[in-house]
Figure (tube, rainbow, N blue to C red):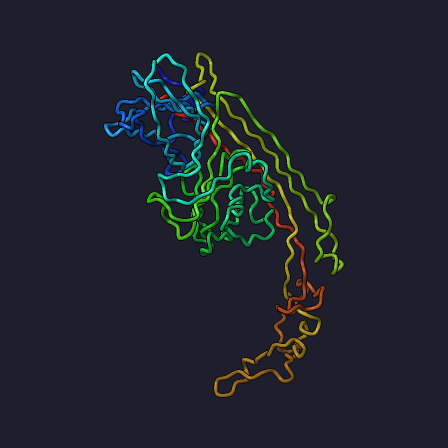
Length: 423
């Protein structure tokens, strides 16, 4: 039987949602450790189960002959980790796993009945003894609350110890869907443009501009789960960088249907004129910055299919339409220069037709005769601006406050699917 286009599209959507995302190098976390009894003897065969409290997705493993267990490929979130073995009382801990974490949690089991209530202890290891990497995580609460003029979660990296930046006019250089302006970040004194930028574990640096630090995509902060900044001593999984690593992780859907909505508005009537314009008597340029967006995530619910505890989605949209005044200084020809008189310009003008031993000689008094000025050039001068300010140290005598415009709405679609139960 043939398949209609509508059914084919629905099937493609289901494949996108149900499929397990590739295990990125730095996005997923790991919990490992050793299980022993009260006398310190190792316990092989202990079942270790990590339950994601937001999605009820479980990951299970068994300790090996050395009593070691490894719960890997864990999406960031809070987990209830339990350990069970016949003739021992089950025990568990509630642990927060962040992107790229490698947590060591050793456990001791006491002899007891399997029917005893599981003891859950809320704990998150502060020291990661299983990795030498030094890093700091900016969690979702900070991503949502810390201000970023350009709404660029990557820019939060400069709140980390050892990170410095030379950002100027962040609302332009780091705004959404722009190149990010991250080539101005230095980590622990390292050279700028030498850092690596990751999005869900995949490289996110654009090479179109030829500069390390031009981001390929800047997600909305509302769609970001956390930002991890690794400053030095990286694991072997990291490469392509002579500086630090800034990794952003996107949020996933959970069993709860949740969303956010926002609209950022800036207009000329809410802003004063640029100081550079005021001192030169230049009127205020138009300014606008319209930034709407929303996110939505939850379980996949379809006719005859309930995705709770196994299949989830997350979607984010952000648009931007802006025009922001950007001041600039230029060199415009003066009234004297327009008629060929460069006697007050501070530059020597040479006559290519008057040479001595092949070397062109200056025009007398640094003035070009009127009959030597090309008619085409003379006509083009009518379309060139005239000076509007006193020359500065670089001899710029024309000041402009033209807008840097970004007038096209753009959307970002970030579908996410959680793993099915793994054993």
